Length: 186
Image (cartoon, rainbow, N blue to C red; front, top):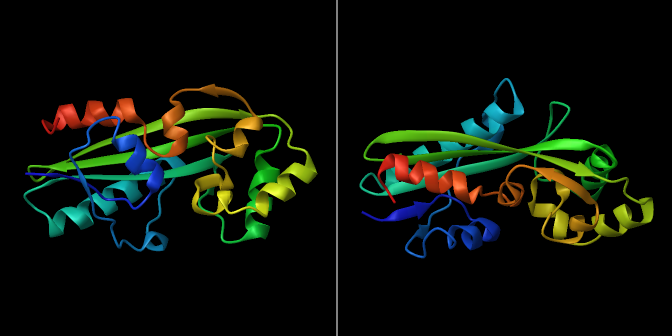
């Protein structure tokens, strides 16, 4: 039995190495646009579960980890921006205020799904317009929920965090380790 991360995210692979080096990667091909939920946190959970279950169907004897991260700004879901205009819109909305980052986790082990959701509150200081526009012209925001990388340039805007820092990067390391232990996979 092997451990499979159902994500192509380089940040998740990097953070997964904090838990174990003994895993492989098999991104899911789930159509995320077809999945809906009542709240942003529930959406993150539903997406994580769909990804894990899709990969687990192809690897039934292995342990599969699915995850998905969304940014929640007053109930509006900010996923990965579709382009510069979308990135600017998201960053304007996050400037000078608090938002939440939700990561849904699903570990499929022994035919059973183990679920968890981690939420972190993030406070941004007001972002200077010139800095915001310059950032939106870099490649950094385009493969990240909410159009920012907390471990990158957005660290300059972050004035406070309540909860797991790694959750903001897309993989709540402590919570995932707990779920893997609960599932008997770690």
